[in-house]
Figure 1: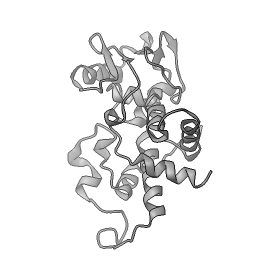
Figure 2 (figure 1 turned 45 degrees about the vertical axis):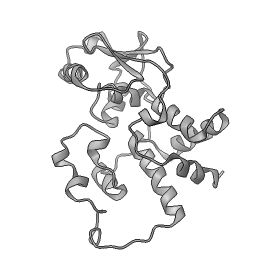
Figure 3 (figure 1 turned 90 degrees about the horizontal axis):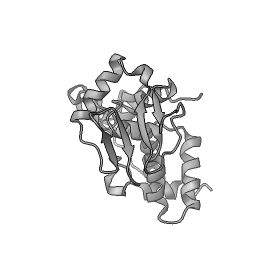
Figure 4 (figure 1 turned 180 degrees about the horizontal axis):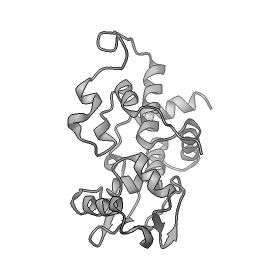
Length: 210
């Protein structure tokens, strides 16, 4: 399965996104907060003019970084959103936020989108009592996600329980019991999704290339 394996710190610095915004790592060690300029020899001093195309490309790259998407996955989500009724940008964000790996991250079951995808791929999670090992499957309101009983004693799973008990989760995600799982309550509103991108720019980027 194709994956983006590049250094996340460099990608975040290039796009100006603090790594702590897309994971639960220590903000004091965040490479973007420590060095808020692009990587490279001239990153701190270079003056770069940004064209309209570059602005739109940058927003698309940020979206892919937040959700850990490949280009084909991102474009496919846009095409589906464009075919759907409603505002294309809002629908695009709702489609991506409904992915299993994204909701696992929002609920605090994982500390980053990469760890969320790893949990899913290794079969740690169940959706409505059935094993789910595809990170991109889209949940519907009412679906429940819990750890598989055979993995409950793993230290990494116990750590997840502790995080869920103390973490503030979006209103469209409900923590079950003492943190043993989560329920997808409803589709999120755009302002509830903690992803800092300009989705109209992303829609324009793909619309010009359709």
